Image (cartoon, rainbow, N blue to C red; front, side, top):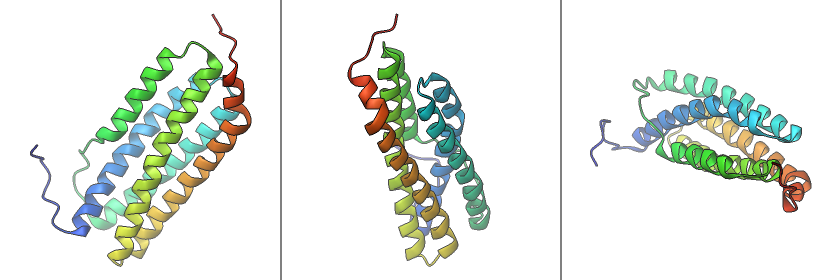
Length: 173
């Protein structure tokens, strides 16, 4: 498949390409997270999702700085992976018959997105370090750290509340 972007001939080109994808990814999350917060039954889950939204907004700001520093022009890329995560989450949420199971579904789906983003940001930090771009490496490292904090919160919430409640649901009608 032919792309409308310049070829990726250097590690720097690859980093810039990925950064454009990150901005789109974060914008997609910024749009969908409020809807998912409304679908959450658990107040603790809503709270973690709100914290995640705060991080997403912070990442958008940091990425804007990187995009400006790198003089990256077009941000018209889409992130098909994020689109697939969002679409799959929406499909699963629609199919959940119980609100406790829906919370487990939502938490697991957000955590899958979170793991994808940990990988994205960790890789970008490694690329930036290899290129001697310490400011950029710090931006990506901080985003990776934020993602890991959310992952930890989601894991604890799943283990101590959400999965326990979803284990024996009382089907709501």
